[in-house]
Structure formats: structure tokens, C-alpha cells
Image (cartoon, rainbow, N blue to C red; front, side, top):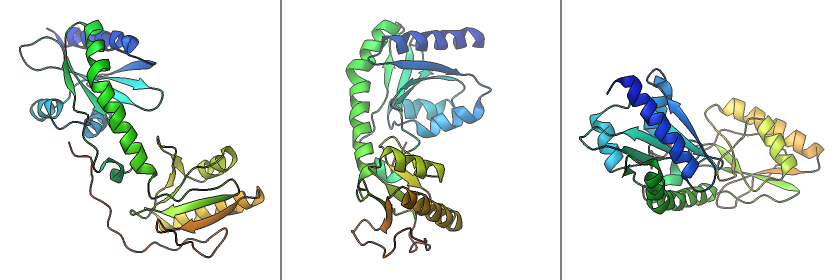
Length: 250
């Protein structure tokens, strides 16, 4: 079968599959020329079994990605054996920290029949259930170690990698955090990385001033509960901490 026919077959299959899955899914085809997107997808494949083995022997040349509104994604890939059908794998959210995946079992992918209607039944009855459980566990882990904020106080908690995190946060405070470089992950936690401590310190100072104008205090806190003695704090570089090794193995 020619590459064009393979591409059309994969894209069409994924479109039908997306329309048949529970909830609302969209489908997007990644052609061979989208090398960066394909490489990023391979890096996020959440699998240690069938799909991981297939990718080890056959580098990804094209794929279709199914996406759900809550950030869940599934990757549909060609099989490279004598059987018809496709492979489908869960995709790990890119916005959760590596620590969130520690202790979470991989929702390993499955082989699909060549019939997308039957394939949707396979996904809904097997992979999707395991994927949703793994996502819930990872998102729960991502929210651990973050001291809770209150309506009139945003608590910024130091993270092992030197970043800061805050949750839960109201709409007004969330807007301020976002405007100053915090990114809301799929667990609802606002995170500011610590790769550049000068930029981090500036962002926290600006955040504190803007929140203070809204009548909201800002405090720095370690996961142990120790609070830095400052409202609208100036951030010092955190104590040296090695970045945790990637917990989500492939």
C-alpha cells in the first residue's frame, strides 16, 4: 500500500474512532513532515508494553492524535506486522511534573481491529478506563505537597525542583498568577518553574503586589508547613535540590 493510502487510511480510521468514543473527542493527523510533533508524541507515549516495543523497532513516521477537552490524548499508530488494524496508546499530559507519575501504573496501549466501530468498543472497555484511572492518580499526585490557598491568601509552595505551586486559586488570583508566568496544569495547580531564579523572583514580587491590590495576601511556604515571614515576598534561590529523575518510564 502506498504511503498516501496509508495516511488516508490512518486519518479516516482515527476520525471515525474519535466520533464513536464516549465524551467528546477530536482527531488530528500528524504527517511525516511534522517531525518535532511526532518526536514530542513519542516522548509522551505512556506505555511499557506493546506500543513501546513497536516504537523501539519502527520509529514513528506518522500518527493520529485523539484529544479530549480535559487534556487526555490518545495516539493511533500503524501496526508493522502481517495483521490488519492499528495500535493505540495513552499519551501522558505534558503539563504535569515528573513526580506526578511516580507509583502510577502505565495504561499500556492495545491493538485495534481494522473496524473503527469495534475499535471504539475496545478502547472504551479497556484502555480508556485504565487511562482515566492513571490520569486521576497522576493529577492527585501533582496536587500533593501543595499547601492549600484560601480566599484571601494565596500560598506559594516550594517544589522539589525549585519551582513554586499554588492551589486552589480563585478566578481573580488565577488571572494574576497567569499574567505573571504561572501555568495552570491539568490538575488545576498553578506552577512557576525555577529554572531562572531572577525571573522567578521578579514574577513573585509582581504577583504579590497585584494580589495585594485586590486584598489578597501572598505567602511562601514549604510542603512541611513552614511559612516564609513575608507578605508579598521577595524570592531567594531555593536550597539546592536535584531535579527528580523522570518517573514516567517508557
